[in-house]
Image 1: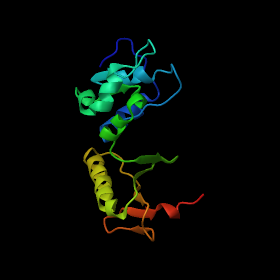
Image 2: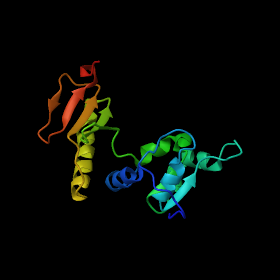
Image 3: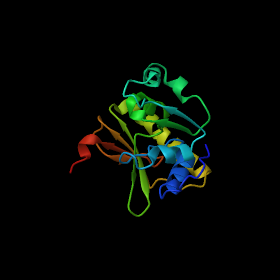
Image 4: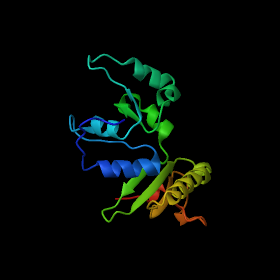
Length: 170
């Protein structure tokens, strides 16, 4: 949605970049710093999950019962105060965690408890990589499944690392 007299922010280029790659971006920051305005500037539709009166919003209850209804509309869609209905994030996220390194490289992680979920998680990571390659974006340096039940850390033939959570130590 185009906002009249919108003041461009430093984060706008990153928001635009990540929206092209992932389709969903979580904008975090202190109160009244312009998160909602930045989100509106990059969205084609929106839903607000809060009321200024302090009462619970009907949209929050709807999001908890039927997230697909809340997610309808032109994409990208701003979901303001999404933390009021955290189940929405599960509907749109593509991977469990992304870590961006200081040198600009980044890594994508899927976290699964059972070893029987490793193939599915690896497929999801590879699909993300393929999608980014198609968009000529910067692919992740590392694709990794962190799992609860595995005896050793290893690299699969498709390049995805599998690491037992017990191998992660401070």
